[in-house]
Image (cartoon, rainbow, N blue to C red; front, side, top):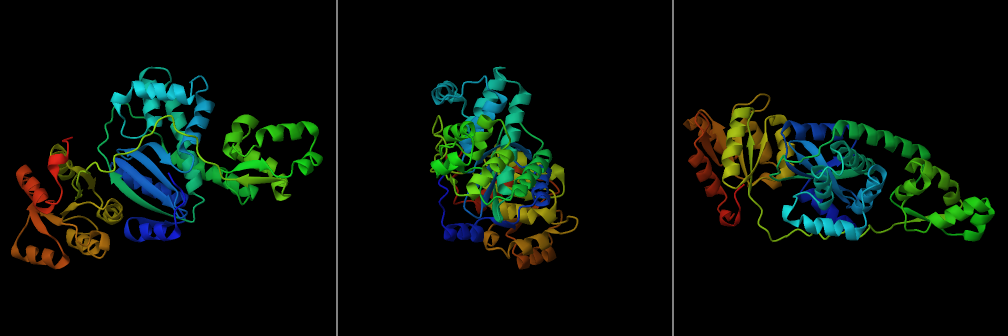
Length: 407
């Protein structure tokens, strides 16, 4: 990913497409992922730092499968592979051959996760080893995100399958990332662990160190290995690596530079012209109704997401930007009219069709629904498949289902 994003484009993204979160603290992280677990979210949580760097958290039923993105996704994966699975050949040619061999089993997440899943299936590695690698990668991503002044997030629904999934305990990962971030802050450095140190003044550095230390530094600090990469060579954690180099950095004898990621063994370019399935949201405190609506919509080829808590539904809908919303009328804390009225205040959802689900569709209810901006009614006393699909087709007539493969 190109991380050189203008401030204007990031600001535009914040304004028009995503939900802004200032200081992505531990409590905010836990609250966000707890919400996604509660609604059993399947798809991507896309987090974008104020610098424009993007992270993609892939989730199944609210559980994290993997995280891609950042500035060094390949370096990050290879480094943790060397720590946990040094017996696996990670040479680009070997990885490319293996990916070509399993090309027919295209994984919807990424090639790294596909390889891990395949190795578990082949019993080359254990399930616990795969989990450990994913866990370390997620902790590293969260540690980076904790340093961002602000982030924006949006959700992308995907219909993932449960087979062969590798998931981690996100709460523990968040707490570990917080611990690591505090240790990094204690070093009081103004650089990032993803930067690469290189010798700027070799003669002065040699004078300030012993001959043996200088030879080691001369070999390691070539400007091509990041501080995180050096943890493998120096057999220390990244905080100790940074701390040991800090005096020389402060003296100007060593400088830090930004480096590119390692070239991936395979190009995983998404087909941007592939039509997206329309996304339909169902907001209802009844799990039975949500499950029934989801079944109907998925079988018809739509993407679907359910939210059972009306208080959390607004932020979820702003992040997802669904094409159609089915909204229950009678819910605790907030009723359907109140939710609808709040949604219409946001430009993102001002024109999104909202269908009220109700057991009563009398004249008074219809008038009130029209006042708050609802687009129609659907009786939930007996959810009729054809009526649901007729409503979807009516309000999504600009989406071509003929190009969409059924789930």
